[in-house]
Image (cartoon, rainbow, N blue to C red; front, side):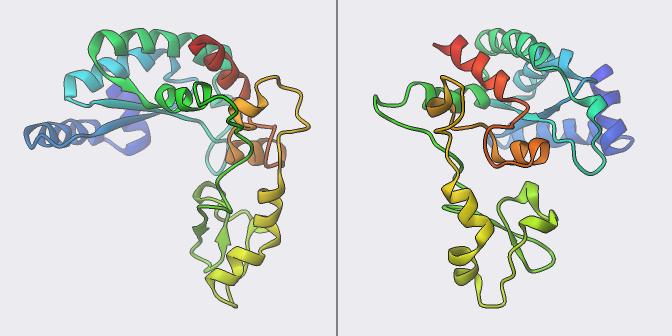
Length: 220
C-alpha cells in the first residue's frame, strides 16, 4: 500500500494499478524487463521491498536511480549516502534470495574487477555519446539538456559540433589524476551529470561518490 501511494503521488492516481497490469502482460508474453526506482528520502527504506516486488512481478533486474536535484527536485528529498548504502545492502541480500539482479552492482563489478592495469578516467560523454535538445543544440548528456552554458550550436552540422565543441573538449580532457580518492582510477571520478549539477565540475563532485566508494570496498 505504501509503495502504491508513493508511486501515484508522482505518476498520478491509478498509475500503480496500471503498472501492475502492464507488468502482468509482459510476464505473460515472457518479455524480459527491468524495474527502476528513483531513491529519495521518501522511499529509501523500500529498496529491499522493491526487489521483492520485482521478483513477484517477474522482472529479472532492478535499477536504482540516484536522485537529481534539478527542475522540481529539492535537496530535502536527497537521501543520505549512508542510509542508501545500508538499505542497498539489504536489497542486495534480498536480490540473492529472490534471484533478481541489481544492475548498479553488476555494472560496478565490471569496474572493480576489470583486468589488471585498467584505468577508468572520466566519462564517455563527448566521446561515444551526446544529446540533442529541443532547441536543436547538443549537450553532453540527456540529463544536462537545457543547461545553457553546456549547449553547443549545430549550425555547421552535427559532426562539426561534436568534434569542435569547447564544452565537449573540456569533458574529454577532464581527468581524475588530481583527485585525492585512492579509488579514483577504479571509479573514474563519479557520474558526470551528478558532479556538474552538484558542484559545477565534470569530475570529482558527484554527491554519490562516497556511496560508490562504499560499494566498491564492499564488493572487494
